[in-house]
Image (cartoon, rainbow, N blue to C red; front, top):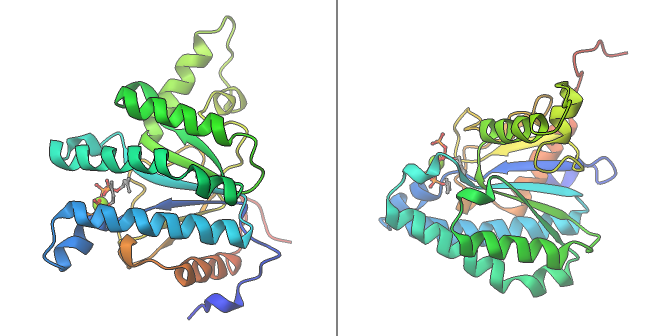
Length: 237
Ligand code: IPE
Ligand code: IPE
Ligand code: MG
């Protein structure tokens, strides 16, 4: 079994993405309503941001709400949006103290105006912080991101379509591709997360539900990642 204490802090993945899944099941196991799971999940997210920041990770992308999650009940969607808004408004001191820079990926046009406004503000207020960059995937779909990129590209005169020009029109072209993508909650699928960017990411699926995830689980995942051989289609020398 990989042991968290053994991870090598000199060869960290530069960018980790997390599909934070399992909030609803966590609540159900405790006979609670699903929204309690989201409340607990937010606490875990904050703990993981602090842990990644303390470990010296450069980029952490968190899948908060997908373009497909609008299919859920109005109550659940409203609750999640409320949590996001409160969090964005209330955590500036936490970001400042830890030098955390916030970025967004996803379509702001599909978000409630208030949330889109808070996102723009927090990205602006934290843009000069030099520590961990946290990318919030909110109203995010990998296919949607690619479609929006191609639209932006073809709206320009003579926008030649190549991998490089599409890449440059994605939401955060200055951020390197994820090295490691973790999915909690045990499902073996991407659910439309970072489709373009994850072409050569290493995947780790954890059976643990997101609210149960801990800093040691993150360290174990990094340790497991460090044992993988990344070949990028080539032949190892
Ligand atoms: C992930 O947890 C959070 C969001 C998708 C917003 P879920 O709410 O999907 O939890 P499960 O998969 O139903 O347990
Ligand atoms: C993926 O989880 C989206 C987020 C974690 C925000 P889902 O729970 O929406 O994914 P599916 O429905 O199981 O594929
Ligand atoms: Mg789920």
